[in-house]
Length: 65
Image (cartoon, rainbow, N blue to C red; front, side, top):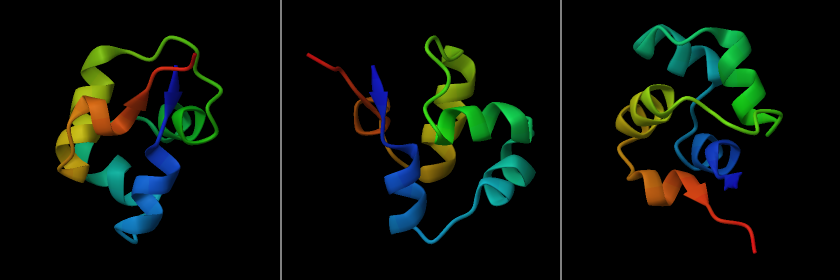
């Protein structure tokens, strides 16, 4: 599974630290998501990130074929 976190942050001119402050998710978890190091991200974290960015989980995640 691929995520669009980096692209969405750039489009909205946001930083990882902005998401951290607004959601309380640890910076290390967000950085792992940003660089796609996380293979099985927590669904609660993904929902918080999607909510903060005002996107759906489908927009945040892309299934790799």
